[in-house]
Length: 210
Image 1 (spheres, one colour):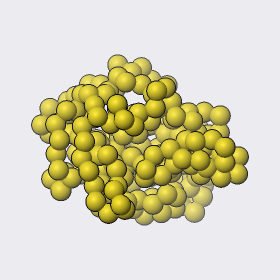
Image 2 (image 1 turned 90 degrees about the vertical axis):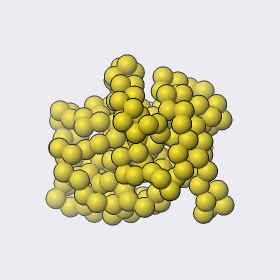
Image 3 (image 1 turned 135 degrees about the horizontal axis):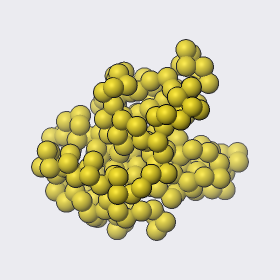
């Protein structure tokens, strides 16, 4: 896990460039999107155990129609970061937030890796599906040296075979991701670059498009 102080400057700088960003309250009726401030989301949706470090840094509301790629990525990254501390639940979570999973996650309300990714990007107005196989095809492939916040970072048992993808994280920057690792853990931020396990399974990066 990284120091909280390492995250705020990333988003503060981006917010200055964009003139402010928002988090979206979620899909309403399966169709429309409602914009809300980060502060409002922190008060109404953020689990008590998650960190408040980034809450309230982006106060301006921007209509979803006016958001471009970088802004949407920042929204997705921020939404995922606000879920830190939520339990891992196999098959759990989706566009509306944490949910009960299946099998050994059936009694745990939380997220698995793809559920967290789906939730984060729903807040940015993109439907990417709830499974890594769908999410791998939900956008454009991005070179590793061009990763930006919100991009989806995928890992596979055999990096030559997309069919073996088993994990996804949401980029915080070029070297860190927020993800739901495994049963018994919680949503957290980790450095994946330089980690032999993650490096050995890295298969690629997708930037979702709506």
